[in-house]
Length: 169
Ligand code: 3AM
Image 1 (cartoon, helix red, strand yellow):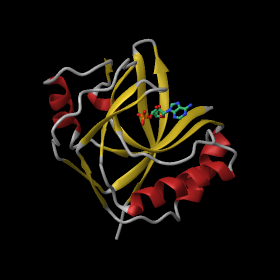
Image 2: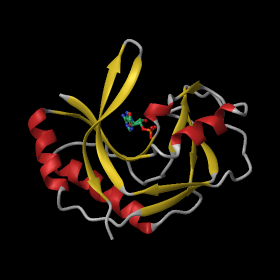
Image 3: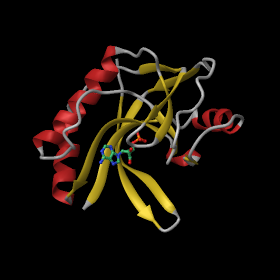
Image 4: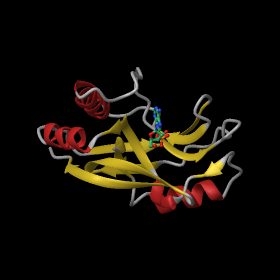
């Protein structure tokens, strides 16, 4: 079994995001640089067989490269996650996220969540929202998306990509 989710890697931008977060008061427990990502769809626990079927199904998924401007802070009260995200984003991002969620649902995966709000979680266990901050204007240039496995270890969680697909025009 593996705990799965689809996300856009934010590797090139991660050091700047971390530096920016760490330069200001920010609530909660900092997410380490290596764990930063922009979630597309949470799938949850899947068997090896279901994971393989998911990977096979996603081969046909098409999406162009995406440019996403991260310029707004936010907070999910229930999840206690403090994040940075876009104010507006390309429609193709929502289409991709919902299509990936649908691929999971067809295999009995997902948590029945509705809606999609792109964000990069910068801290967890945040008891309050981060201050509303001037637009830092980080440009996420996404040219691939990945299926990640979430692995819990005594020293924290880490995310391992199981497969990645290019975003192509
Ligand atoms: O980094 P974010 O917050 O976007 O919050 C978890 C994280 O996304 C989310 O999946 C990503 C990798 O762990 N996640 C974990 N459990 C979840 C659940 N039960 C969940 N999202 C929705 N429902």
